Amino acid sequence: MDVVMERMLPSDTNYVAISTFSFTGSFANRVFTYSDPLLNYTSGVNIKYRLKMNIGADTSFYADSITLAYNSQCAEVTERKLCPNTATYFSVEPLPGYTYKWQVDMGSGYTDIINNSNYSGATSRILILNNLPQNFYGYKYRCHQTIGSTTLYSTPVTLKFASEWTGAVSSAWEDSSNWSCGIIPTQYIDVSISGEVSNFPVVNANAACHALITLPGATVTVKNGLKLDIAGH
Image (tube, rainbow, N blue to C red; front, top):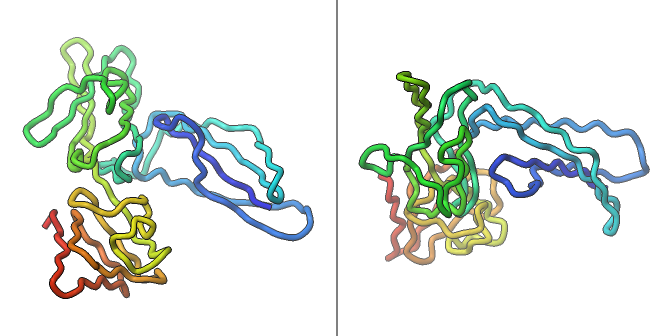
């Protein structure tokens, strides 16, 4: 039997499984605890959660969903790290009477965002980003808020792409199945490697990443005559 915790952020079109609690044995009262820190998300939005119960291989049902107002955080968010081609959002606290205009700095100063295939909500307090290309790495976002002659700017948030080495299939760096994002890293993706994986990466062909973080005990092997280009350094 499994109990699956599912969550829906403002940028999600449906619920996404974020944690699974599994147990065996007879039916009994169970207590599950889950903490969702939401460290990479700004406050001021409603986030939905629900539980799914899977019994055996052929039966499942949902408990009622719950909507929580996420209105506080321990520190200001200045970076957002995620997999390429996924959706995310930025938000600001609601200010009565203020208008909102989201802006992006692509490296040459802030310009106003226009709704398109990558952005929606450009003039609301929640900006949703979809299908983000890898070359958006390093873009900075802020919200321009005005009422009369008063202007406020939100804390800029830098967009970054990151993937974690899992080594789930083999030691081959160039096998996408070994990466948490399911794609081979490029010059726009930060890479992290834990010292507790079963297989450490071996680079068998010229490769690249934006940054390489190796935790204690982790190793990366680059075969003779090949190169691992760390583009961000």
